[in-house]
Length: 88
Image 1 (tube, rainbow, N blue to C red):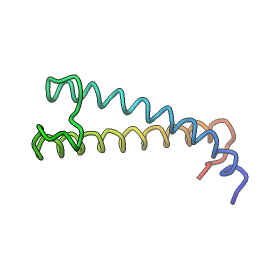
Image 2: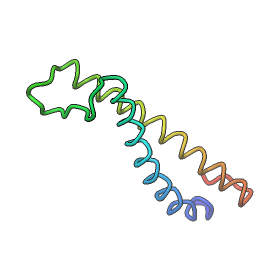
Image 3: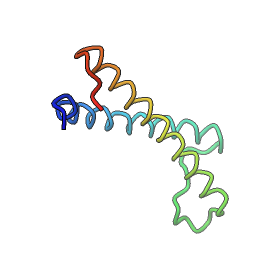
Image 4: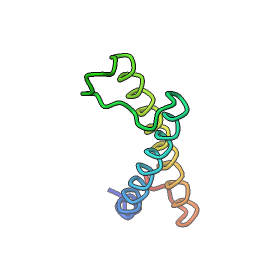
């Protein structure tokens, strides 16, 4: 394993945690706009339909994947600017 990859691990983990927090906030706002509700349904909520549960899960997954990709790519780009090497 290259030294830059090892050195990037803690940075990547910290950036990933911040990305998770950001993705959660983005999803909460998106769900408010889509469903006009404050909270997304839980998978075990017996009073919600399958459609509602699966729609919430798909939207949440798409947002989390998009934010994760953007944060990971941004972190790797920043490391290359600072060190001159790509961390991956």
